[in-house]
Image (cartoon, rainbow, N blue to C red; front, top):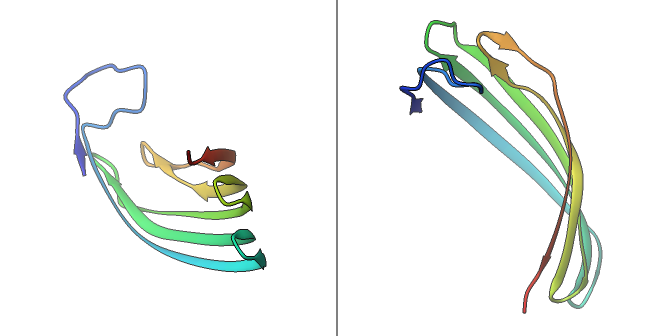
Length: 105
């Protein structure tokens, strides 16, 4: 839940809103050899979004990613997400490509 006081902002800035969602994740290890692994993950989010002065609307997203650990201290993650968020009472289509790299020292 959020509340904002700024008016005429140059970004999405509802006076108040609330979102409730439920997520389910399915993960499968495709390859594993000691500390090296390659897995994929599918995540589904379902929920509802209510913004001040607009009706409550359904929101959802689907995310698919790969996680690769070629060495114990290194991880590469990449994937895509598709969903339908709501802005000012309108359901939008959202596509995202993402990638991440992490290392532990």
